[in-house]
Length: 281
Ligand code: PDD
Image (cartoon, rainbow, N blue to C red; front, top):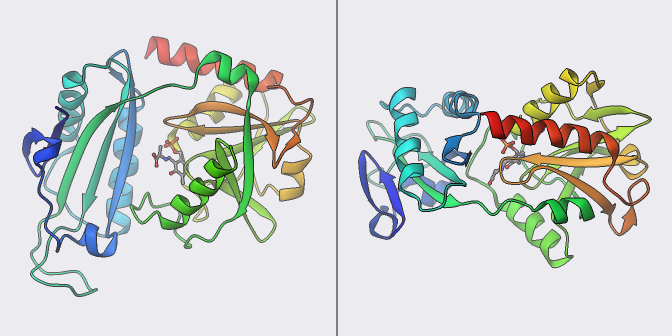
């Protein structure tokens, strides 16, 4: 059985009963986080919890659970999972009101659900081959900095990528790269790394931030700036970062090779530093 945390109680995930009036169900009115753990050590937990607090603040959901209590929930769910490597998913919605109306209901307690799942990491041999990415228009809203559970455009984009045999789809708006369905994007051109800046157009990914700081610690130049679709298509390297995909090299874009069609040297250095960080965390 998979253990879940549901509004203050641990129970089997299969036994969680969500009201049909829960605003997560009716309006996708909520936010979430996904935290990885390696060998039963939560990776970048404080950073994820800080981002969760920011998401909650931005959409004005209050909870009475402290950061320490939440950290305890993450640990409990992680420790209960037979797999030592996995993720904990946590979502908070505005809760179940008496009826359906768009404005916030008064006096409704937030609903908090969390559970852990095993993580099948992308293998070294898959990484060495590299992955296909497609491109697609970014049709999402203007507040992609909030980790909202309203994910329909991303669901459609991810399905499209899957049907084309791609690991991810790189989205663009007004000729500029934004991010992927569930990852951030980096390019390398002439030895310089660039990634779209973290404004309202993208989620400021935790592994995005980890990759930036690891690259800078290696003495590499990283610019957070606008990245055009043209630059993407003519990049020497493209990487994507996320909690579940870590730092993965894209070697084909819409079926054209990226650079020489193999994972690049800067990806390799940052990836190595990332694996070292996981091992010592
Ligand atoms: N997705 N951009 C988007 C739109 C995302 O949904 C995610 C994460 C990221 C990467 O963020 P991080 O490095 O903090 O995981 C970027 C998670 C993993 C998901 O939806 O499953």
